[in-house]
Length: 117
Image (cartoon, rainbow, N blue to C red; front, top):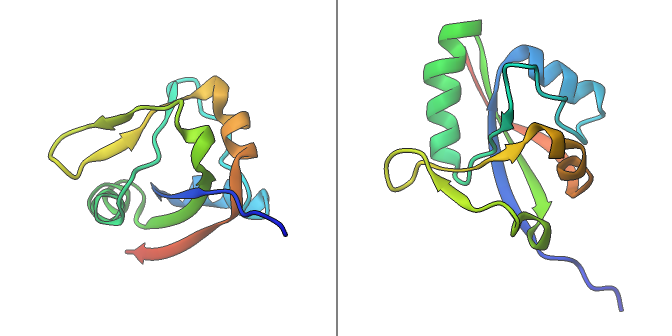
């Protein structure tokens, strides 16, 4: 009998350039952060991701995407949930230097679930 490890669903609002890099990874990894991006911010609820993609990414790059992906829950325990505003504005703060290890704990693929223009 195989046991399936517990996963947590995360979302990430993203623009077209980052999404192309995710596509290049065959939908399995987030790209390295740029020097001015010391932290990778996945979010814990879809509504928050939609607001960022629709209201920020569209304004800055003409299109915004919301992605959904699963990460090993036990691994995520090292990142405390951060409340970045209201009660539902919840994020994880993953230091850029830990992103490769974070990517190794993604279970399955990164899927686009919304697109805004």
